[in-house]
Length: 439
Length: 200
Image (cartoon, rainbow over all chains, first blue to last red; front, side):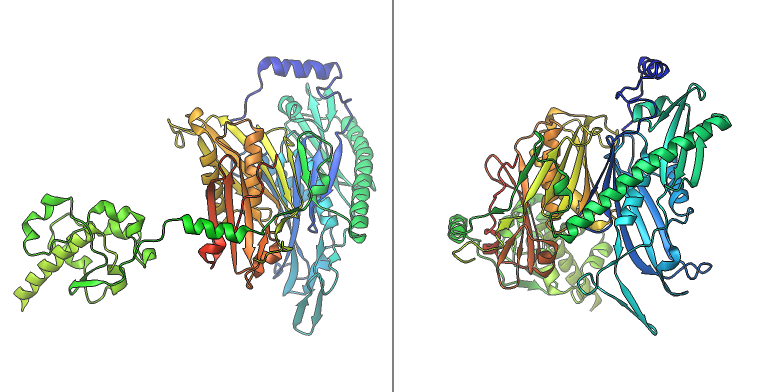
């Protein structure tokens, strides 16, 4: 599905508003939207909301062989997915330009800034290291994906605990969470991206652009920084030329925003740790508001299972008893067997000439579709089989190939369809004839 | 199957929220115990010509796992949810259009398929699509000793001899979907009752 294009008047309206230093959602130019962080019950699972933009992050780990040129370093892997849920324009499994750009930026922000001590992820040098995989899913796209994704990634990494291990000689023991408490990753610093949108060739500047604003912007500047005011990565895209002063001003704003966000993240992590320690309720159910018209909660709902058995008994009694099954195969000739009595053939004319030789026992093709006629080995009656054996051509060779009485096990032959039966009988007759000839 | 209510015969506490995403036409979060599923619906919308049907709206269901890429299990669940939704959705009212339902697994702690079904129903409802009836899913696990655990957790599911999932519609409590894993007798199948009703 294509994205609905922005009409010219909408574009003009947005740009005019920006010129008048006004934004559609009522923010000032340098205002960041509200950031909300919630955690799942698993370690390393979080949802970050930046205004209406929502990203789900999940960290997982695995023991793998290290890269040959980095024998003592663990592996960090980032994967941002633009789910079709986030916007109708995102297609499944297509590596769009935007996706590649965002993934690369995320890698530069988090892996290349060395915020995680990869050497501590080494188990046995050159043999086993931890691979930390960060999966990020964009759930709702309302602009500024990269900021939300970078916050979600670092929050999930901070929240994550990997299983404890011990190495004794050649043997590596991985402990379950019950045996030993899982250990957190060692994180040096928390880089966070802040995006700036430029309009009218850099005349106007907005922090944290929304989706509408992103559509009319001329250029984008992303600065990743940690709370120590160290710049981790800078990327300018969109083909605008920025002045030195503008970049410096942006980096100053970034410093302020990053400090605020880092504080919020630490508070959220602290909160979650406290709740977990006290054994309180955690998880996404807690992040759903209690008093809201679109939300509903229900406590444990016991189910009355007292008279269920009687009811079940009753239902079974009422139900039609299964029809008698014809389990005894009737062997007509070597190579043809039949289960059940069958009904008159309605195909008629086709077999007229051969009727004389055969017993009149052809099935009506329709009855076999009826489940009541199904025999014990229903599972063997596969549609393809039925279809395969409809032999309409008179070519003897083909038919003989299909039916090899010595080889085909009995069971597969028993539930023959009428069509098959017709043809198989025909075949066997012919085969007999053939045999006679050959004898 | 004793005469007194067993501890296993209860649904875990659940919570739902509708319309929490701004972009999709309808969205819902369904949290049951520690299992959580997010659903988003787009539609009725423009349809790719290959999927276009002159008779009804084409329904696409996508199930996204939390880690890694969707595999065979996800594909089979997608098909199951699609069949159940198609039975409830009045797609004839929107011919030559498409309805896309995206399900995102947020956390899996047992009874995932029934959570997907419930989230799907709530999202379709939120999107304002015409439905024949509401529907809901219930999962139950049969322990090796024959005890029935309704709405099992991941551990219960793992230890169970058989896991059964059913979907019922709300008007006449008819069965929309039934899928089982493991061996069980016909009598045990009858044991499961529709308890959710209309949870919204």
